[in-house]
Amino acid sequence: SQTIHQWPATLVQPVGSPLSLECTVEGTSNPNLYWYRQAAGRGLQLLFYSVGIGQISSEVPQNLSASRPQDRQFILSSKKLLLSDSGFYLCAWSRTGGYGYTFGSGTRLTVV
Amino acid sequence: DQQVKQNSPSLSVQEGRISILNCDYTNSMFDYFLWYKKYPAEGPTFLISISSIKDKNEDGRFTVFLNKSAKHLSLHIVPSQPGDSAVYFCAASGTGTASKLTFGTGTRLQVTL
Image (cartoon, rainbow over all chains, first blue to last red; front, top):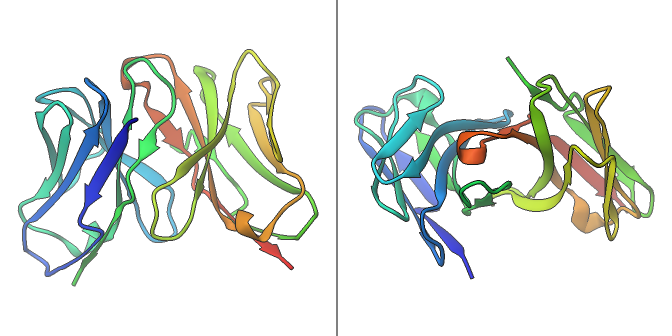
């Protein structure tokens, strides 16, 4: 069966510090991978998606970047965090050509 | 541009009654619709889906209705239970790269005793 792991679960970082959130998927190959953010009182906003190693598409301009160094690994990064980067970050995967996602358990990021 | 809208941010329903959550969309290219349920501090979990070739899909207590002409779908939960209290997200997908889902802003359902 397929599983998705996302860590850490919570993170408190000072403004200006770097960020690295990691997501890995097991039990499947060549998944589509996604990073979403849920800001306080907001819906789920797609940040990045990837259809293969090294292939990253950005949905909105922002202070974040994503990388996919391996088939089942997706990393969300920032060089310098802003207060507005606070939120609940979710990684998800889907099958190529398939509908619907499976989400990770999320990371609560608080920038102070 | 919010292509998927959930206009009710919250809904309170008594246990045993019907919960109806609504969702509207604007993009006529969407052909698959899903509902996700989310508890605090957890990732959303898939609940039920419907293809645009259908107008109804039922799974136990959950039924999704799709009205393509009105670009409207709804989720019915009957009977509602306290464990159904969560945030419900409507999502839509069209054909194309990565099968990206566009989510609504969510409706917080509270089922009271």
